[in-house]
Image (cartoon, rainbow, N blue to C red):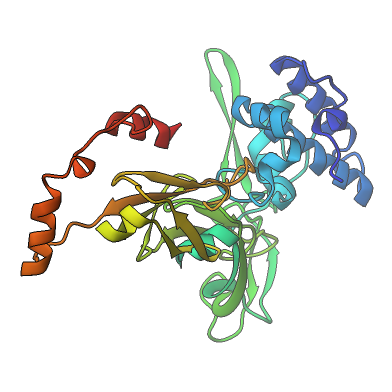
Length: 372
């Protein structure tokens, strides 16, 4: 069972924004890798504190967590719409929360320490097409990706321009005194290393293109246009660097019978006059297979049948949507002589004249019910 985020930071549920920030800073300094070199346990606590702060420092994520706990983010870790969670590496944390550590004295947080921020490779972007059934149930996709990796046999040496720091420091005298500025080293691009030896076929940075099969676990409930992140599966960068990420854009394929609206699904069911008058049993498609529904006798066109829990699971863990079946009574466009004589006779029968009662809702009432 995952540890409570408030317990990780040692604060109460009613903690203010400043108290959350202060508690995270205290924990991160305590377990900072510069203070605990080689201590895997401290590094894990450092990452947990960053994960807790990422959620509790965001009002929207905090509200969802307070209401639903960790379930609010299950299946979305590392993806857009959730939180980075365990997918965060040390450089991600340094980059994302570095401003909190203003004068801590630790490197990687802008505090003037010795930790060098490692260069990061560029991100890759791909598009994955999903059926409505795959979206409803979640799916694991294996995708072939061409990415740049460090070529075997490539060796690097400390950059002579920046002496391995990845930055160039410049001091200028101004009317306000001596000002120090730091910029990325133009020679190594911030990697702190330059090419020593590289094999034939590698580019100027010692990289080569390799095709790799990447397994992507897509949680149930994703939406068209949503972007997922697979950490570390983008391009590599030269030297002692970290790979970029693989960004996966979701494209939802049209379903032949079902229409999606948020977590709810809509199905148009057409029935005959006879079925509307006498009642019927019909089989319809859902994202989890076929189901049989009963149509009561005397059903009116426009009736909406709600199949609860037969829609799409919420990406935020709020349960499942419904399947709304819209009943449409089909009017024949052509009639033979016998049929025409029957309907002409019935047109004068009081039983066939419209006589709506309080149970027969208006169009606007049906729309209101559909969205409630």
